[in-house]
Length: 120
Image 1: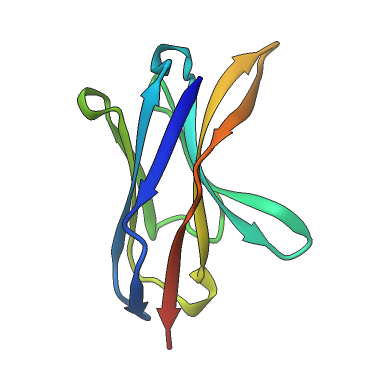
Image 2 (image 1 turned 120 degrees about the vertical axis):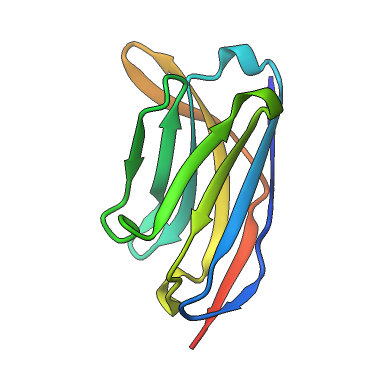
């Protein structure tokens, strides 16, 4: 089992910055990737960014150039640096941990979410 706990959500003005943190614990050796998700229209959740155990990253088009995902392996923590925030970024941000099975990442472990609110 893996547990993930998010922190860092807050109210911020448009154009501002926030850094979200996600701490993983438990069977962390089994984690192949970690990602940040948020709700999206017509979808349950959309991928905002993810990072593999090898350091490879992916970003949603809507956040490229503004958000950066990184990891501190010594602290078992993943960060999401969010710059140039827009009101449309307002959401609950969920951290999740994935394991690779049959060549596909399965996000099996989810946190409770942290609220990010961007005021105009």
